[in-house]
Length: 185
Image 1 (tube, rainbow, N blue to C red):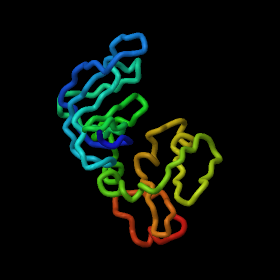
Image 2: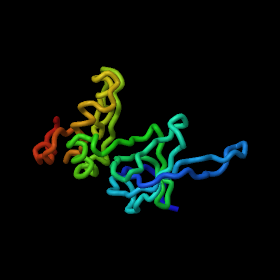
Image 3: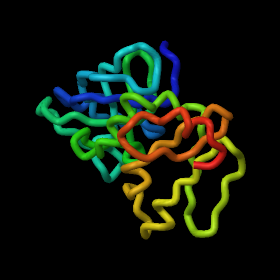
């Protein structure tokens, strides 16, 4: 059995079928959708390709629907079930790759590991404060009327600086050494 935990991948769904996944407490079969996928890139997780993604059979029970034409690419965050399998729900991040901003794509492809030791904290209402230097405050929700896909999410990356603190970095160009060495962004 592979290690369980969070996974973030870029993938295409190539087929889907309903499968039995055991029984509930009353003995009734539990159905899930099994998507066969073609993984393009693993952003977070071990060096093992994900072959199947499982989800509940409808959005009414927190399932996610993916287009299985094999043309649409997705950014998918979910939980590993081990052995090349992963599980997603309505609460997990699933976005079409084309809907991501250029900054989001570049940050995933080139800067993702730079933020692994940083913590992003949601600010639900103003004022809010960071509790440690390894924290970036995400304010889209409070500043843009409950928007989870706002300016900060689309155009910034939380990156660890050379002094160990974390700060938001904006833009497509790679972070400059001066930025990584300054105390305040």
